[in-house]
Length: 507
Image 1 (cartoon, one colour):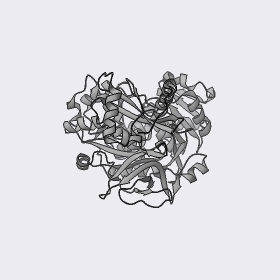
Image 2 (image 1 turned 45 degrees about the vertical axis):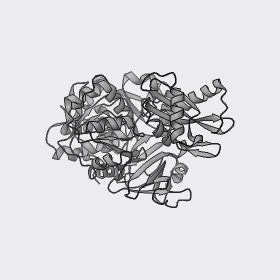
Image 3 (image 1 turned 90 degrees about the horizontal axis):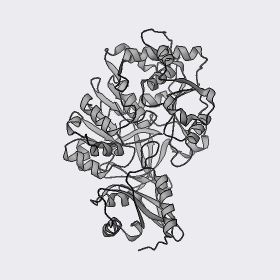
Image 4 (image 1 turned 120 degrees about the vertical axis):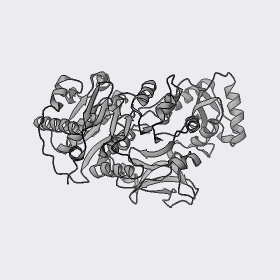
């Protein structure tokens, strides 16, 4: 079957920018993207790349990532974007596990590649050699291989926040189905412009934003590395029709000195996902009449559910309903469906869901029940069918035998005017196993913030849910996918508890 969709898109699409890179001052049409990919595929075949080989890329948001994706599809190779925010040990684990044959890279990031075999480092994407190979002013016509829908198209590795990174497999059917699911739920159009500030090594920026937009013939503006002030300027210059961002990005943009609501007026909707929404962000955008809606997905299951613009005003915390051709269920520990309003583990079924983990059949088997991928997220569905994410199953804090959902405590603390951002984690307690703690970014300095937050929390939460310890921080630490780094915060909490010799007591 023909899965070389960039070639088809180039035939049917008018000549206009598909990719704009303001930092490099370059623009590429769909026709040029296809030629660049055919030139690269021809080169890789000459260099011995075979069908099924894993080919990696390690760099910022750059047209070279798309060059390699489309060349891999033409070759029948497996595309591997590597997270450059990981540490050298994690990167080494991914390289070894994937069996990658060649790695394209940006020289700026070579310091992160010190623990891998140097012979795998193939070419600098900013080099003249690379530019000469892909240059669309010449065309090495390439005959694409015949592919099946279940052939492996790509590996995306999990961030490793709960263990060793795992290679999430995507078939060609997975890629195509995800684009269909999203575009038929929240349509995008060939006239649309969006800005890609999310990293292209991550499913949210790659599977959920970039691929569906290019499927439909839209125009994408690349921000090589996220910077809030720069992104605000890009919003003003390019007037995007829609955007996908994570809450911490939105927060940084809204508090930046150059924030201008005019840059957001062209946006039909903003989809936020990747981590729980920040109430302050939702409130500010709602006051400006800017549509902010929650979406939900994960590496193993790209866009699963999304709210609507109208429903987001009534239920701002909901992730809405499943997208078209996707099904969700909420299971108890015995895999029975829970009743409306009850909490259980969210399961997802659809053709966009991964078929499993690379070289990990046991982990794959444990992650599915009746073809539903078990997300590890606790969720609930209301009487209207709207889904709410409650928390990560593994992040449940068990203190003195009582279960505490960090999200519940975060929601309460975030209502206090002193709290700009808040993350709740458990820390080791010799008496209760775990105790509750909260890391907070304050809106203003206050020497008595702990007493004030404690009194506020006790008015709204059961005593065992109230944090026993607080940590004031200037900036929320983020992990490799720009989510709050809960492991780092937990380590800091444990260190603080040891220094204080804290012995908790239940209230």
